[in-house]
Length: 322
Image (cartoon, rainbow, N blue to C red; front, side, top):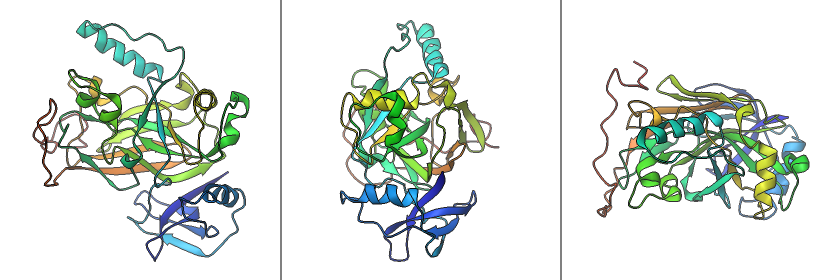
């Protein structure tokens, strides 16, 4: 069991260390792991798993704020599970009943979608409100599993043997692009650049069946639950997914979000420039990100969801720490 961090070394190249001390300001210190092959090298994950299993107590390091990067640079695949906490399913059905929409049934198998790998960012990075869908950007705290060993057709009983590590995940979601007619698409609404923060640390040896998880917006807890409330637990998810596809090392599994998302609040609470989000998971740490507007000068086509950037949050609004 250990906690590890991927950070930028003096040469600007990501490196790994064992975390011995850390704080909420984004600092971590400890000892370096053995030098690893580049992440794109097939030998990278075997070497990383070996280093996690036997840290050799290398040279000391100090990672200052801004140096910590995502524990996974460019994963081969980001798989995500929808409606996997009972209270999240319940809040959806309250909204469905109020609008006259059909109720979502209790799932009998996991609901799977993907997030594009280019959406991955790290601790203290920005979440960029996209010009293509700026009005309904929502938060979702998630317990993330990163596969360390290639997995195919594994059983729930041995599924955890294929886990490389666990980390905090944030499934940022543009609800209008995801859900609304005429062009609502889950993958598009959840795959904008910066919509998959991961970090700050990689934790090994945890029991994934009973960890507290929270989403904090501007200092206020918006989601608070425990992984014991997953409808499909982590071993079941790994086994199910591995029977549908080969899970390559570095594959990220976002296991679902609990109730309390902004979209189902009254009134709804969406992310706006200036917000600070934190995903806090017991045994891992606190993943912090800063919300900004897309200020690129590129052309924005006319779409059903494009529009002006939301204004920064004013005092007295839900989610405002003041």
